[in-house]
Amino acid sequence: MTPKELIENFSYLTDWEDKYRYVIELGEQMSALPESECNETNKVVGCQSQVWIKGEKKEDKFYFLANSDAVIVRGLEAILLTLVNGKTRDEICALNLPEIFKKLGLEENLSPTRRNGFAAMIERIYSLINSSTL
Image 1 (cartoon, rainbow, N blue to C red):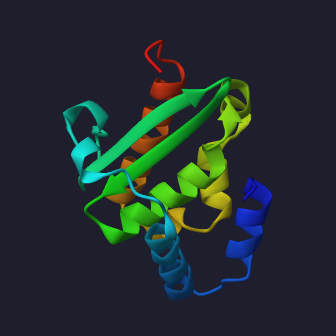
Image 2: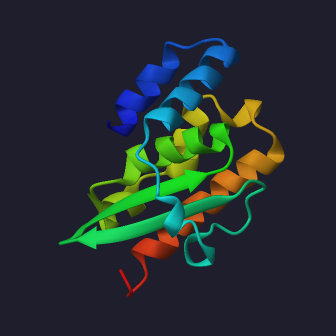
């Protein structure tokens, strides 16, 4: 799914409860990082919930798996991974992830701690794509 398609899907949902349900549904559909990989190495620092993201590089493209102990956060992870999976470093860096998040209409309805957690997930993605260990 492209950022444009994701924004379009959310644009049909005018009620916050519908958006909330859609976010949860996206999280339920996401292939989760196995619990055996939910460890300190893959942990996202700065999230209220327990959040893990692991990346892998295949040729010049990046692929990520994520997991969380909170259903809404799993949905936010699913949105983020939908935007970045299968893209090159340059393509990921060209995305304005915080701006896309705003366009989805989620920012104003999430608590400050959830917004900070989403920012921490974005930082984890940037850290992984700039790591020499992937």
